[in-house]
Image (cartoon, rainbow, N blue to C red; front, top):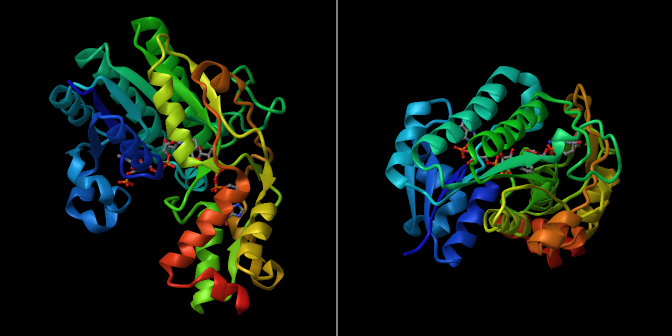
Amino acid sequence: MSRRALITGITGQDGSYLAELLLAKGYEVHGMVRRVALEDPSRRLDRISRVLDRVKLHAASLESFPSIYHVFRLVQPDECYHLAAQSFVSYSFDDEFSTFNTNINGTHFVLAALKDVVPRCRFYFAGSSEMFGKVAEIPQTETTRFHPRSAYGISKVAGFDLTRNYRETYNIHASSGILFNHESPRRGYEFVTRKITSGIARILKGESTEVRLGNLDAKRDWGHARDYVEAMYQMLQQDEPDDYVVATNRTHSVRDFVNLAFSIAGLDPDKYVVTDPGFFRPAEVHLLIGDPAKATRVLGWRPKTQFEGLVEEMVTVDCENAGVSLARAKAI
Ligand code: NAP
Ligand code: GDD
């Protein structure tokens, strides 16, 4: 009989890649989604459109324990990947309360339902390099002290602690991935990488004349989401639950991303990129670079896509989606 996986946040970037991976491995895949998503499939289920006929979706709200409990009772999963979250760091400065509510209570509800209904179900928590925040050491590893710099980062530290606590106290097979930034052509438009690549496509199409950005000096360790969901899967295949840093061990500034993306499109960034103080954050995480040695050693995981390939793929797909060919773009 095929194994059954439940993914919260299946409509997001990572959820969509993970659903494809698990289906390819023969899993029966279930997704927990908001009711509004079922009512507006063409827009809200866009990222999972290619697998919609092969996944089973269940309406529930991260804000409602009974709705989550009900889904666990119905699905009886063998593995649960808890990806749903308010994931935009910037927004967490605007509304700390709803970020805590969704990310902390939501994680607690999922863990509590799992413990009660399917205590042998394996659990993955989507931790984040934002937990390191004002970094205590470079590069960051599983033993680096947390110092979050946003409500989002704090909420992820709380989720990480809840996950560890359920592992230690209730013997749940619960693991956390401490994932560094990972991107793809399915990234939300509000995140800086997609904002840049989709902005380039709009410029080439003649729909815009600029891309307005905030801090260009911030540095991130950027990988590809398709590679990172492999690590999530591998964590739940281990005999023992544990926590793992997943990263490329290379860091680049936002400016590096801008320069490479514009050069792929044959454009001069100085003519189009405008620095806008409105996009600076009240507190910044300046430098993230992760050491995935433990994930490589234990899980056999390595990133397959490098920074250059990631940027090229994102620019290419956004230009294709906009109907602009890159060959033509370079000739402009
Ligand atoms: P994403 O594209 O923003 O997807 C977030 C998912 O969470 C969506 O399916 C969204 O559903 C769902 N969601 C948000 N608020 C919800 C709520 N109140 N109730 C129910 N569902 C809700 O994020 P992602 O990039 O795939 O990231 C997946 C997870 O990994 C997140 O927990 C994120 O914090 C974490 N993470 C991401 C990265 C990264 O670089 N991508 C790095 C470290 C950790 P809707 O479609 O209905 O909005
Ligand atoms: N979003 C955005 N928009 N960021 C900008 C902009 C802009 O116009 N200009 C500069 N930046 C800088 C931000 O200040 C930040 O330093 C960096 O670009 C990356 O910002 P985001 O792409 O919004 O991602 P993030 O690093 O804050 O958060 C992402 O990665 C985390 C893992 O480290 C999200 O995916 C989180 O959910 C994830 O946990």
